[in-house]
Length: 151
Image (tube, rainbow, N blue to C red):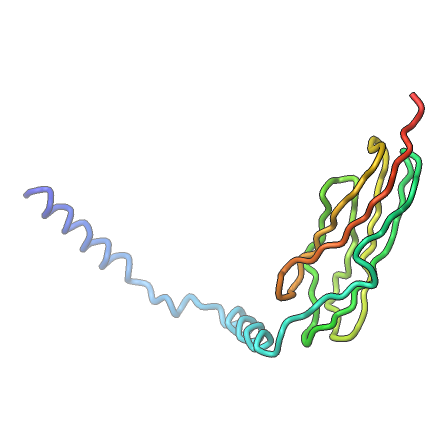
């Protein structure tokens, strides 16, 4: 046999052996229903976030201080707002976000803490909120001037 015949035979064997399973039998009905509900919700619009502020300045603080602020989050969209993650540009900034869906026209609180230890001078941190909005991500910022420790 030549190489082409062997190659062709191998391809035919793969086609017949690989297609023995019925792909539709592998569909999980729960996943299908969840996907249908999600897709139906998307036709009614997206969730939308508005904040009472998008920036917060702590002013001047001392190195080693841990400061906190909150951002009020309002769902101005047509469907429940679901925040799936929130993260900052460095580990010194820790966001805490609402884990439950926020209904249209309702509010939630995003709490942000900043640990200034080892962070002297001007600091600016961005917090990214991942949610089911049209953009998929929204941001807020905090800033401060950290007075360095005396060495």
